[in-house]
Length: 225
Image 1 (spheres, rainbow, N blue to C red):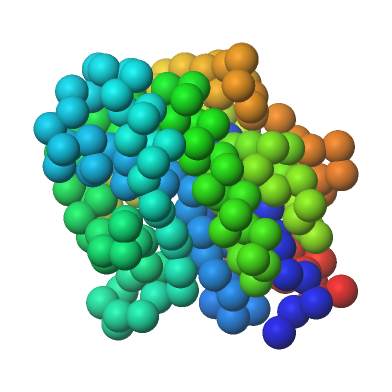
Image 2 (image 1 turned 60 degrees about the vertical axis):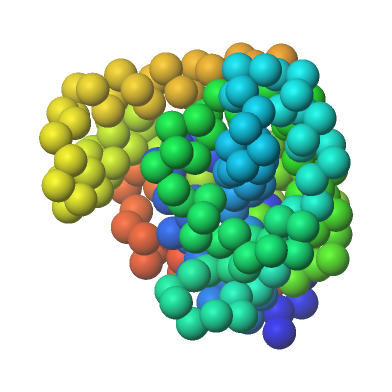
């Protein structure tokens, strides 16, 4: 077991956060926690209760009352974690096309984000976790033992996402992905609640000219130091 019990990984979209976090969690034998699953769970609950997604007040109330937990995987079906909602395993249910279509809107609601931040902190403070997001080191888990801020040029991140989309058979162009990332960066860095930025004590790692193995080797050395 690593002496580092809480690792926060932040950064813009397509910087390699999830890839790094999964490898770190596997290597260190701790929980990989992608905080985005929390918003998916809220979205699923709203759909199940037939609450209109555009009813911000009602969706926020669901988020405040919904018991959500993320635990190490207990089923060998390629999952990286168990997502529990009211004790029910919804790990794969939150990946439905219906959830995909609405989770972005749900995650924009300030009340939902505040409720999920509290849940994320509760899970993170249990320790033995690699937590991924855009405000982990600054807001969700400022107590983290190791804070990493992954970055890369917008062009490099767009290229990576384009190659991923090609492998999945999608037809989105490189220019469309680049425009989308620029818009996402602008929204993330200028939002009023928990804007995207590196924590003052985070180690900033530019991955523009690094491959996944090189990034992992640098961060695992920090975690094990």
